[in-house]
Image 1 (tube, rainbow, N blue to C red):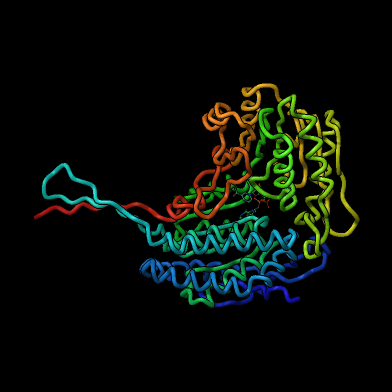
Image 2 (spheres, rainbow, N blue to C red):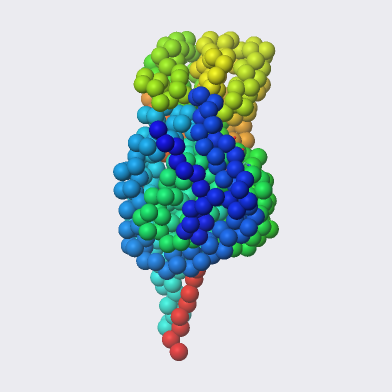
Length: 478
Ligand code: NAD
């Protein structure tokens, strides 16, 4: 099978870095080198900045219906190339190919949704207090944009930025993760092959801190959209402040899952286990702190463990595999440390807790019971296949624990009591809350966090708005 030919996209041209520097891309299931991702030199980054300026001048004046044609043509090309892109995504990131297909389908839906929604960036006429005055507020694309994104959803993380920016009429320079470059390159190729004008989309790779420092220092980009960890998000926001760029920050989370004893406990446990081990837990909205009401604890844990026993860990390209490796071997040590710390603090290891084999970054699906709130895993985002389960007694206890951390991305609850769901809606501090499911993400709904999980939304009309700015004009009869 052929992996993507990895290149930079600058000013409509696919090419290598001008200084010939590159780094290897590894398949985390086999540890084989599958490609070389080129690094952009400072001159390449400057060329991308200039191109994003000229690209913006073209794209902002392209009528939304014309933009839609290009985006729709790209969506069709992605569908034609679907299987190859999905398999490459699995090779570079590790997730089972079935999940890669779902992710790519979701990404294509996002592209189509913003292609359509770009036609509805409405303004409004506001009645004036003075006769003979017309007042109009209107929206326009904010300017060339910059995006840096994490590796865990190589298609969706990239597409949320690309589709939002292009739908709104912005140009974009994106630096996808160097660990998962092929999917981003495939998305870029579909767009350039579909006729996207030169400079509208630019794709660069390199040493992340160096690339971001250089690009953020430039006054050309007017917007930064970042998906990644809290620490890096805060750092990038400081860099963006020097040129007062608009920011959208999609950062980490530590999602509580509150299971109340009035819910269907077995069903809740099956849904929770299914969600936890998707993408080996490397999901910003992964259900992470399992909080179960006292009388439901034993049933929940038993069914959860039955589900975990069914998980087939292996190379995501093989049939029957339901959980792949972690993205890279560096993550194995983090998992071991979190498990050991929880056990040291009195938690019970009920499943997993160790690496599988000695080739590929496979970690066993892990379940820890009776985990105290002081354990590191209850405080630091694990970003892996670890499920800590704890007890609570009352609704207030559950809400208090849910709100204890500075994160506020997603939260989940299972209950059949309407009063409980209303209380949770009012009192849980999270950008996303799902009651009786784990469903918080679709192309047409806003997606984003509060508190340290960031601000601003991707998805829905809010995701288009993130790339627009409002202006106001009055015209007086003279
Ligand atoms: P990270 O912040 O270290 O890296 C994320 C991405 O940013 C990577 O592509 C990395 O190369 C890049 N990056 C790192 N330092 C950078 C810098 N100084 N300048 C520019 N780019 C830089 O995070 P990670 O550990 O690789 O990814 C996982 C984190 O991302 C988790 O915290 C997860 O919750 C978060 N995440 C959030 C969302 C969301 O939508 N809220 C989605 C996916 C992942």
